[in-house]
Amino acid sequence: MSAPAAESTGARWRRYWTAFNTIATRETRRYLRIWLQTLVPPAITMTLYFVIFGSLIGERIGPVAGFDYMAYIVPGLIMMSVITNAYTNVVSSFFGAKFQRFVEELLVAPVPGWIILAGFVAGGVGRALLVGLLVTGVSLFFWDVSIAHPWIVASVVLLTAILFSLGGFLNAIFARKFDDISIVPTFVLTPLTYLGGVFYSIDMLPAFWQQVSLANPVLYMVNAFRYGFLGTADIPIAIAYGIIGLVIVLLTGIALVLLERGTGIRT
Image 1 (cartoon, rainbow, N blue to C red):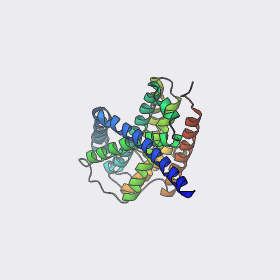
Image 2: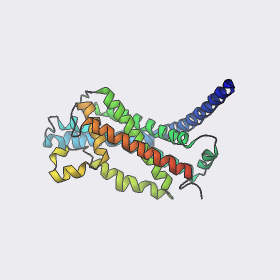
Image 3: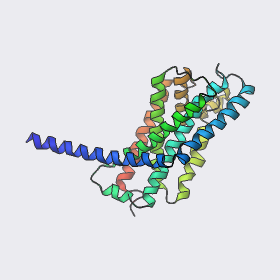
Image 4: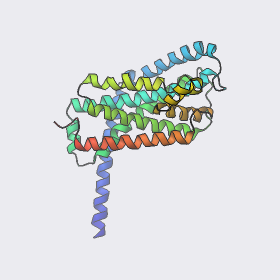
């Protein structure tokens, strides 16, 4: 009796893997096919940031936290590109699936919701990491990159890409028209990113605004990533990991519940 049960379990997991691999491959091919729109613009934008903020304005600002201003902002700019592209990839792709009505085929397929979620998140993570590598390559022309803690750099960028891919998925679930997928990035994501310590240390702020900044989750990601490069941060690294992990668990739970209910999909 044990052999058929084991075979059934193996077949089920093979089906799950096929479904996940199909979604993830489709997502990867989607952004690679239009690489001039998905990969090149972020690299160009970050180059302008390096030139304007790092080279021109940075010379007037001077050192921050004991580091050259260019060295201080490079990790934040890399993280900003990762955040933006992870979010954008998933929100546009899943909303496109809703708009074209083929997401309903995914929902009736014999696979659980977490497989569907994982496939879309994998696409967002892949694009975010690729853009992050491109921006890191661009930064080599402006700064002699050194990494104090490679494993922290790798883990933080991966967890951040996962987190904002989940955020993009939730935005796409609730979006009813194309305009809705730009509301959160414009009015929530961009302010949080710019106020997340990318261009400054929170130690430069008055005490009140330092406390306010602690409510910004992006601050923890940027600082953890900066710690991986420079070995210094405004936030204890353990707390940063805890916040990132907690938000990932929370967003994953919400996304799975909404997907199971068919919120924003079933009419």
